[in-house]
Length: 123
Image (cartoon, rainbow, N blue to C red; front, side, top):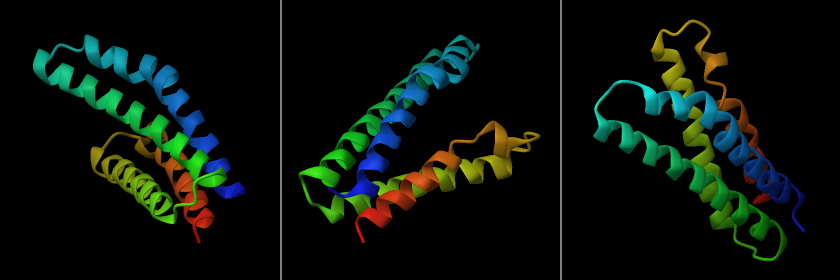
């Protein structure tokens, strides 16, 4: 068993749960109620669910790679995803001009440790 990958897998599934339930109430529902183009609104809803699916599938893949399916390439790919997500959240927070943006868009604080654990697990 590869402990860092198993921890990363569990952490990713916990992140998925936070995203779906906590973020759904805080972000998705208000976004769907906002008065803007219905096609843009539904596209953003699909993007939300794509991230949900990505997190769940990544968590499952990390658990598999950490227990029964040795595949460093999968781990590197998932770590790269998580780093790119963190960079995007940091960049958007930086350019947003929202006061306290780094705390209001805190997802990067989850993705950096998940990426680090995943990278460590495939070294």
